[in-house]
Length: 351
Image (cartoon, rainbow, N blue to C red; front, side):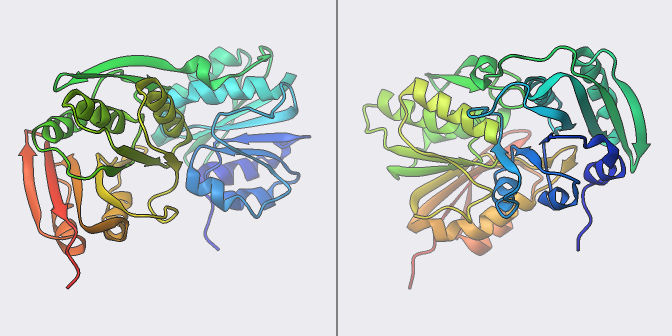
């Protein structure tokens, strides 16, 4: 049996904190749940973890920060695991203050290498009497009183809108803490969009993998409209609940067509697309992690129609070109700057 993440092990080391009805926010391994002394609510913003929670029927299961059906002050203890994107801690603490009853225990657990030192300062702003109660497995545990409970927590209240313009097309993009929170188009996506304007995709039915806030799909349809073409449909898929929420909001405001799926990779998707476009992430917390994109390249061929196109932008040092050649077809370099490269490969036609 594989060991739990350090943060989960440290919670079990402090099992005396799991008093009464417990809410756990930011679960990353459902293996924690049967080891807890009692059940309660478990929230994860990761689509794969959420699906794997299904057998744990004693626990109320929550995907992301949508609190529909949840009541204020319903829990006696709230555990908050430090998120990989520190900006997201704003949401987790607010949800904790909403779910916890007045004066109950709020607990923050995080790894040192992922920024618990800074996270604890944020925790103390929400929980003024908080204090560090344990340090183990390269983690810290902070605990304090929910003296400032929230009567309501609505995710839409945290949405911020940013207009971005590329190749003459403007899109208003929804952002949440940790998703499009910098408020500007990143260099890789800009290079990709400029390349799509110069060398348009031929397919009417497109999939945006790791769609984030829905920038590519909404921009692509806006560009096609501006050119007098049919906008087509651009579906999107992302693993993170906040990204899915942002992408759906961006699409709605832009009048874009397409479904936004919450999935961990392509395995849960059915169907084929004429083109797949992506600016995939390569970080997992503070580490470089290309495993998700490598798995995507291995799987994407079965989701492309014969002759369908993959258009991918990535940091030039990442090892994707050989994988695309192996699993999809001959690769072309369409655009390049000092940091990023745009690649294109067409699905090999069956013989």
